[in-house]
Length: 319
Image (cartoon, rainbow, N blue to C red):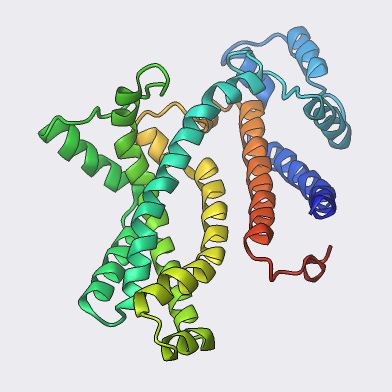
């Protein structure tokens, strides 16, 4: 296993290198000049502009700029914000715990809803329970996050006055208030994940129910519930766990709308602010961090998958 992990880490190097090139290139394709943003509208000083460009290496060819940038990134220096002049890595790390808390809470909501619903829908296929679960799943996929978030605020904050409409409370400062602030954003973000995960779980359980070992177990007199709980559930949840891991990675970088609706101080909202302010260095840092986190989560999912299913031969995975 250690050799497998080391080889997978080595394989990540070219992937991360390609990601860094793409991120760097996309930022340079965006219209506008970060020096103009930093100097402010209406301010013109050729000498100051020349000094600033030299400090940011913008007076050099693109490949040289990339070399300076990636060299600093490898040392943990993502540069400074064009607007606030604060270190970008500090700004991201300050917002990252809020995004992680929201993503994990949304994943928990999705898992609690989707896995039981998917199992029930598969076991009771073509019944009212199945149709109801699939109908709710289709609705969850179809409803936009921003609309669901606004409706939750309208009902639970404005009408019922049960939950705060927006904001964030650190968990260790006040656990109860933190949970109250977290409920609606987590439900909003977790709904789409729960919808797709319900359908996937149902499909995997149905596939396992058709296997020969299920018919053999039933022929030996094993009850249907025991077959599902002891055999079918274990085998069907292995690929489901893989999908959960990948979707958590998507939640970490895809919470932009939810964080904006609920004024949640995560990296998604920070990215929106950076785009509106044309803070290109900050956008660059956020996108790179999000991409690296997603790649590392994929690696973690692969490792967990091999640990859960001993039938998987590492040699078949190209290692």
